[in-house]
Length: 266
Image (tube, rainbow, N blue to C red):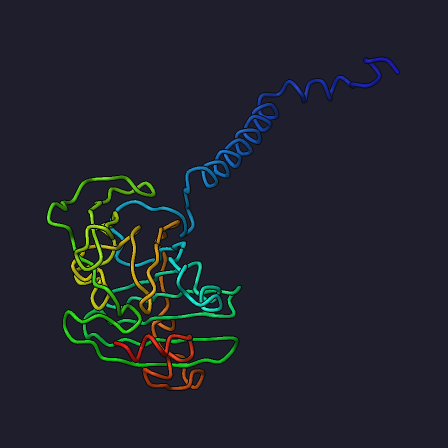
């Protein structure tokens, strides 16, 4: 079949119409835009639907962290149970920290009212759920953070740095003022509110800590933010689920997570 038979005159005329050619152009443009958006999200952490890295002040949202632990001296079972990730969700005055390990079989949730000092610890170990409530005084540190205190070194001053696309501050810190335990602490003063770190080891830091070290139940570890997002946090995430957790005291809580010997020494 010849070319004249394959294309009728009316069809050839349609191909030359401006609106038809422009339609194809627009389609290619939309496809290119979608591909560009996908690359942006993968390589730069952009987000246009409430996740990823955002810019500007952030009074409400969440930060995701990866966690690692200095567990050489720990019991092997306890080392396995320690969480590998953490999500911080916040809206003044509430701060929620959720950590999970063993594929979600072990979880630790801290619900803190940064104004009143009220704190709740929710622990789930292979389906066994326990709740511990405490009231912290002004400047006090919640039970889960009990251990060596953080302090800024004498020469420590805020230096500007970029982290996850945000303008942050980095300072030299240490545990109990020991220079041998120094590390760099990165925080963003535009995330959260005054007193955001109340009842945590970072009480003297004005802003959300994005990278640094801390102690969880006396075990030293490192935290590194991997994602910052602006999102609405429902009220239900800041309350203890009714009838789901069994109330326990301090020693029982420490026994549940294998740290009862450490608790009796404090």
